[in-house]
Image (cartoon, rainbow, N blue to C red; front, side, top):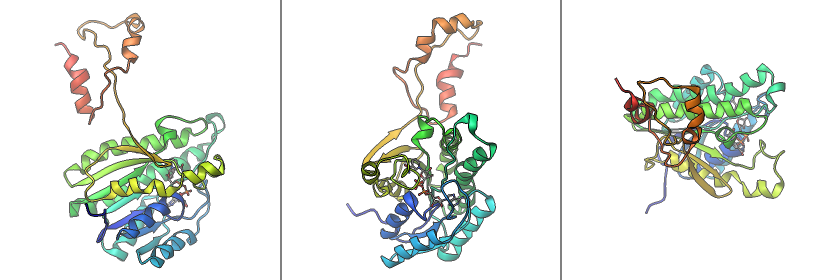
Length: 303
Ligand SMILES: NC(=O)c1ccc[n+]([C@@H]2O[C@H](COP(=O)([O-])OP(=O)(O)OC[C@H]3O[C@@H](n4cnc5c(N)ncnc54)[C@H](O)[C@@H]3O)[C@@H](O)[C@H]2O)c1
């Protein structure tokens, strides 16, 4: 089988001035993609800006014979996202691939969290993913082709103390993807989600050096790159990737407990059937709210 290549494809990677984004950009460029390296170049908490990070990664790509263009827009505003798309159009004429990766952290418990900590994190992760996808989508629709990878986190999928802003943004990105996968389907736009574990500046202060070394961003990027590939048929998938482990995560619903819908339901009926209601044996996945509603809710209606 031939290697996976991206010749002739144009990829935007947000937050690609360092960490995971840089690694995704380097890999896609090494396989022939023209890459727009977007990065605001601020601190971990989102303050400040600097063009140096994006420029440096572009130089690294070009030194290896690849094609790259820097972009310094913030993904957190629609103007910034539109500017990013303009950079791609000016440099390479189109957009085939979008990896929404840019991120910041403002970790603090709910009791101590300031409104500004909530707003800043939601703005970069959730609104940033919306902004860039909204800006790129018309181009992808027009050309009948697109690959989008959004970035979530196990902190959102499974929870973590002190990260309610980040966890909410990251689960918001999953909900966003669940909807967009349907909207992109008829235009051959596939949208998937990566939940990475990477030794980057975001994790450098909380993980010991041997773990950081094993969790190199370079072992996450092949999964992201596959999700960006023309041959990728996956859509709406979430894959956890880190330290050379890859595994799908999915939202599933238990078999549940269906009472007679023509009769009243009491609190005591809930109490008596709690084990059944919360049992996850024979759980299943649904592709949409319609599928779930038909299978579980509407089918239980007695008229
Ligand atoms: N490192 C991990 O273990 C881990 C785990 C789960 C999820 N993630 C997610 O992976 C993504 C990359 O994280 P990382 O660990 O490589 O961190 P990182 O800090 O090295 O990279 C994030 C990049 O995004 C850029 N950025 C921040 N705000 C921006 C904005 N408004 N516009 C454009 N660029 C902006 C930063 O300048 C930075 O270069 C993030 O979305 C993060 O939440 C990382």
